Length: 190
Image 1 (cartoon, rainbow, N blue to C red):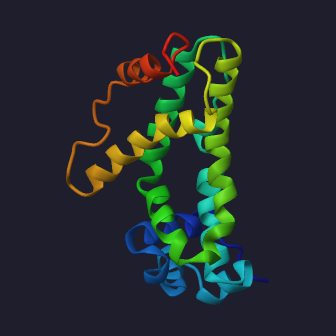
Image 2 (tube, helix red, strand yellow):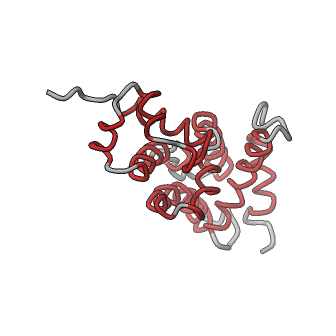
């Protein structure tokens, strides 16, 4: 009988190597060694390196905490929760999404992961839309507002990884959200 594999170990090894080396630099042999499995087992289970990468990345980001926040009545509280959840996701997975964005144009075989990634941003956009309907956030494209909330956080993380900043350490979430709402709140001009 075939030995069952610990998929979480395989995914962990896959994600670590992908962040370190990108798609081309990551081999199934290295994944197998780090995960403590036979390389043939990976191909039997996933079929290809691209399918394994998509499964591992999809597993990591499908239920990202910032994509699970539900809207309430207070945009400040909701967006603080989104930002804290994003920071927790970033802390756990590091530059995974940044690496993915850099790799997607060169490796269309990874494009199947994009819908999972965008679902998280669509959830943030839905929070924006709910507060727009309640008159608490000004009119505008809620998807763009979601990107405007999250993108600076990604850049701050990227700068840290490049050695050009402190990253999210001691990040003042309430101040960040207040600043965001000062330009996007219902009283802000369009």
